[in-house]
Structures are given as structure tokens and as C-alpha cells.
Amino acid sequence: MTLGIGCVTPVEKIREWHEELTAWRRDFHAHPELGFEEVRTSALVAERLASWGIEVHRGIGKTGVVGVLRNGNGQGRLGIRADMDALPMPEANGFAHKSGIEGKMHGCGHDGHTTMLLATARYLAETRNFDGTVHFIFQPAEEGRGGAQAMLEDGLFDRFPCDTVYGLHNRPGLPVGQFAIRPGPIMAGAIFFDILIQGKGGHGARPEQTIDPVVVGAQIVTALQTVVARNVPALDSAVLSVTGFNAGQAYNVIPDQVTLKGTVRAFKVEMMRLVEERMRAVVTGTAAAFGASAEITFKEIAAPTINAPDEATALGDAAASLVGEAAVERNRTPIMGSEDFAYMLLQRPGAYIHVGNGTGDAGGCDVHNPHYDFNDAAIPYGGGVMAALVEQKLPRVK
Image (cartoon, rainbow, N blue to C red):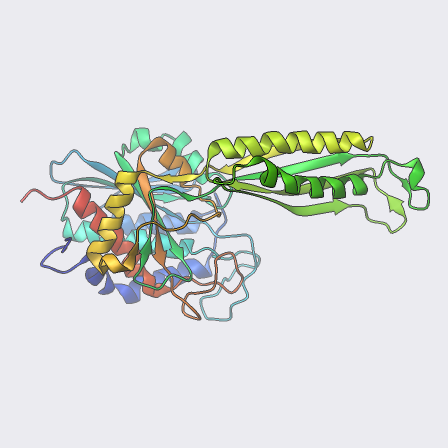
């Protein structure tokens, strides 16, 4: 069991700073910054890391920050990652720390994740109950803008070698003080798609003189519903959702073009490729049947998030050392949401854990909702689990 220093657990130690950590988190919430725009956030992160004697590197992946803390002579190297960016959405909350920037909001809890990793860094810098090197990875642009890949392209793991790497996310609906993890797939891969349908426009009173792309678009939407149902094996999972249909402006004009957009989610790369292949056939074939043409383009947003079995066990063990085995769900049902951290896991073994954000009015509002707010009561648990992991993976020589 991890006991930290003097039989005080990391959670208990971090609670001593809870008032200050809460103030930091709420300040981040009030000043949201979108992907690759996290100038203020990264500056505050760098300043705090440096104040604890941690070596700081800025500009990794444009606005990313990496803190390096070495202790003892151990050769083990471990990375811990948190995301920093906000979402381009309005906030509907009325509390004092609500977003001060119109159209931007910390609607996914990255303000809390950043604060949790700062708590881990502060704890480890003060206690130094480990032997080796820890890299604190503060990632920009998780929300669909490719921040993980940007850091990797900047040589993240070449400049800051990690044997393993770990991440976390708050989970509304899971009580504070509880954790959920699983080996293997834990979050889905995500693809965005755009479809352009080219027809022949004309007067709404004379459709026989047109090739109506609205009708073609409607048929394509319907036909796409068969892709998962009739192509993906029943024991695998995938989701295909058309989320946008843009057609025409006038009541009496059949347009020349229609555009569709949407997303595909799956837990296996091969299922993502299968769905793409079948979508291309359905889209082009359906359009051709009506005398129209169509093009479909795909943009991969995230790979499936795959936990290495040994590392999922280690991270689950760290959580259990803090809250007891009964408060750690070891075989959590995978979630169809996606996570940019997946690209780091493609390059290094590691694991990703869900941290309880609370239930009901105390943290139960789901992410990407204008009423969401991170639950500050979860800070010691997120910060503590990563500190406990470091102490277990890089034990200090007695």
C-alpha cells in the first residue's frame, strides 16, 4: 500500500492545499482558452512548476508545457499527461467563476485536469518519495485540434523519454473518491466526415428538369444507417451519426449542392477503416443511382484509446491504495467518446483512468454541456492517484 511520507497518503497531503488548488482551478475556468491558444494557462503552469524547482520546457506542440523532476539515481522514466484547452461553446452557469470570454467554456473539465497534475507535481517536488524521472506533460488542443500529435511531432518522447505514460479524465455520474479503468479499449477512435452532393438545381415547380440533391442527400442519410447494422460484426461496436444536412436557402429553388457531415466512432482501427470503405461505396453509389455525384472526405480526430494491461493494473492498484479496492471499477464499460491522448498511447505503453466527478447536482452534469462545472472535491483524488502511481512505479531505494 502506498503511504506517501510519514503514513500520510498523497490524497491527504494534497487536501492540505485544497483551498489554493480550488482557486487555481476556478481561475482557469474563468479564463478559458481554445486549442493552441493556451498562452495564459501555459504561462501559469510553467510559473508554478518552476516555483517548486521543477525544470520547465515551454512551446512543445506550440503551447504545450513539460515539467521534468528527477530524484535519486533511478533509471525509470514516467510521463503523466493533462489537457489544458477549453471548448468553443457558451456557458450557461451563473457562479462567480463562470467563463469571462463569450463563446468559450471549460465544458469538459480540462481546467480540473490541469489543476490535478499541478497538485501531483507539487506533491512529488515536496515529498520526493520516488527514485527516477517524472515528466509532467501539459497538452494543448485536445478537443479535436491535434495537440497530442503536435507535441509528438515536436519530439515529445525523444526529448523527454518515457517508459510509460498515463492520463486521466473526470467522469460525471461516478461518485467522488471512486475510479474506473479497464485493460484494452477504454475510449473510441473518432472520425469526422463531410459529404458533398452535386446535382442540378432549378425551379421548385419543375423538379423534372433538375437532379435534386436534397432527395439524394435524404437517401444517403437513410442508406448510411445500414453501414454499421449490416457490416460491423455483432461482437464489435461502431457508431455512425449524420449530424448536419445543409441544403438550399429559398422555398422555391432546388439547389445545385447539398452537404452532409457527421462522425464515426469505433474501438478498433480495423472497424474504423471498414466503416470508411462501406461509406464511400454507399455515398457514391446512391448518388449515381439518381444521376448525381458525391464526394466524401474523412478526418481522423482520435485513434482508439487502448490501455496496456499491465499499466491498467498498475494505475488501478495506485487508485486502490488510496480509496480501497471496492471504490475502483477494474472493468469499466468502454465509452464512445474519444481522447487525443490515444496518440501518446500508440507510442508508449500506458493507461488512462476515469476519476469520479460526483453525482446529481454535485458534479453529475455531463461534459460538453453549458451547465457543466468540474467538481473541485475531485482534485485531491486525481492528483493523488498519479502521485501514488509514481511512488509505486518508481519506488525510492530505502
